[in-house]
Image 1 (tube, rainbow, N blue to C red):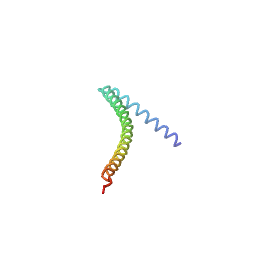
Image 2 (cartoon, rainbow, N blue to C red):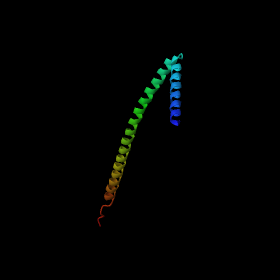
Image 3 (cartoon, helix red, strand yellow):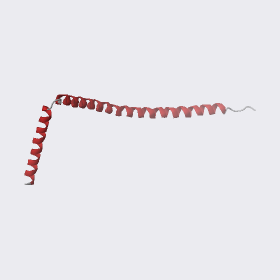
Length: 93
């Protein structure tokens, strides 16, 4: 019996929502509203695509930053060993 009530309730809700949509479509200015909603949906879809692309760019940027850090550390350590070898020349007595 509870299943039958639930089905009736869902059926009534479906009928009411269909009726509400019909009334809205008959209202003045409804076409403009629907057009604005569709345009907004398209813009949101486009933004989602761009944001997904930004995730990839952020990953690439992080990888490049790590490489630059490694190269910077390598050149700093190589430069300090060169300068210490120049200053550590043997003295002639």
